Image (cartoon, one colour):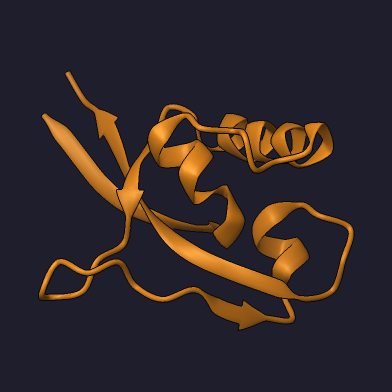
Length: 88
């Protein structure tokens, strides 16, 4: 059985998290994203959250950016990511 949940993370991580394409990230950003993913285990990202018509939900600004990403800065754009976890 697959369980579904959501988690909030940095918006600019989307291509890396969903498609495995880290070309737009610095080594530091990639390390931060990898650490965020590690904290999610056994959950893993499969997509960005979508609205009723199937379009990706727009990124939003938050002053709680460090809470959602672990980054050392006050504010930034975040997205909700769809997570899966396989249960026996």
